[in-house]
Image 1: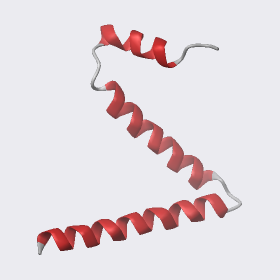
Image 2 (image 1 turned 180 degrees about the vertical axis):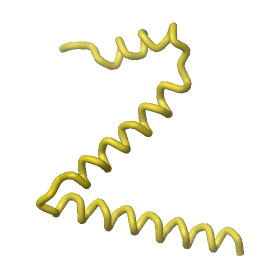
Image 3 (image 1 turned 90 degrees about the vertical axis):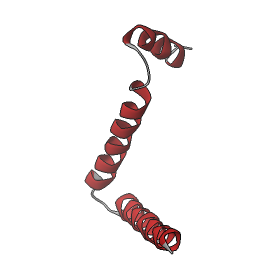
Image 4 (image 1 turned 60 degrees about the vertical axis):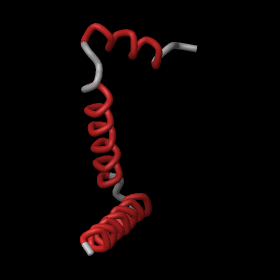
Length: 68
């Protein structure tokens, strides 16, 4: 029963996120879209860079951002 409730609430949350993203993309004011994208980058940066030591961080950044 707990799993069914969790799946239902998760589905509702995903639909709300999709609706918010749709409104942000289709609106004339791009402030909401900018806030959503910047929030996603902050979360991604936090989860990626937490797992590396400071000595290994330079190697990770160097391999990701190689100029072509």
